[in-house]
Structures are given as structure tokens and as C-alpha cells.
Length: 153
Image (tube, rainbow, N blue to C red; front, side):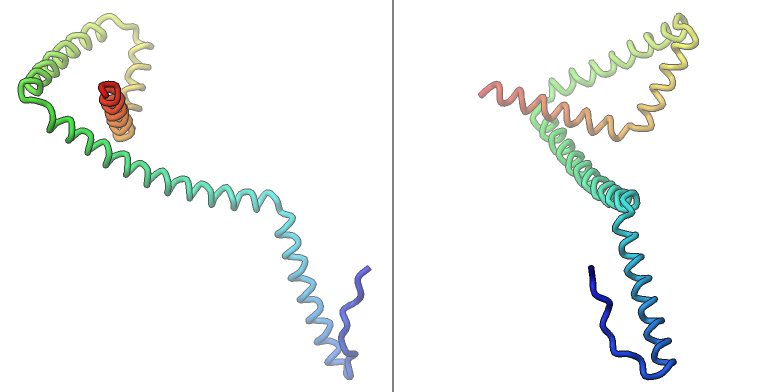
């Protein structure tokens, strides 16, 4: 068992009241500390919040780095491509856009309404997350180029 807190006895009733009040305050603080230590849910939520903030900051940092690397890779590819290849790629892109427009029209004419609604919803999600998709495409392109380059060595 623990020993009671040793304090000199009070000489007057006023000193006794002060000692009692101080003891009550100390006891209240101790109870608050013990309650905080045993509140596992609150402690877990605090840790989860801190971890979420750290993760968000790290994700933002990595996203920035990926964007920079993707831009560097795109410029590197752009600089190394010969002009005839760039011209062919532009022509192919134009032709692809035309064919995609034709396919879209056929799609509108022949696809059932529920399927078109789902496709429209998917297109909206893609538009809303355009930056993420562009970064992911850039990373995939950079990875493909690096793997292709390593394969030639």
C-alpha cells in the first residue's frame, strides 16, 4: 500500500482548508491524467489523425516529384524524336481523333441507354481526376521507356 502524503499538520483551520483544496486539485489533475491514458479510442484517433496528415503531406510531395519527373521524361522524349517521327505521330493522332469521333457517333446510335449512362459517368470521373490520370500515364510512359532502354543494353 502507498503511504499517505506526508505534510505538516495545519496550525489553523485556514491552513487546513488550503491543504484540503490543494490536495483536491492534485487529485483532480491525477484523475484527468489517468483518464487520458486509459482513453484508448481518443489516443488512437489522435494517432490516426497525425498519421493521416503525415501521409497527405508525403503524398503531395511525391505527387510533385512524379509530375516533375514525368515532365522531364516527356521533354526528353520530345527532344530525342526526329521530326519525321513527330510529323507521323501528329498525323496518326489526327486520324485517331477522327476515327474516335466516328466510333463515338456509332456508339451513340447503337448503345443502350443504361450502358451510355454508365460510360458517361466513367468519363466524368476521368475528367474530374484528369491530373492523376495524366501523371499515371506519364509514369507508365517513363517506366516503359526506361525498361525499353535497359533492354537494349
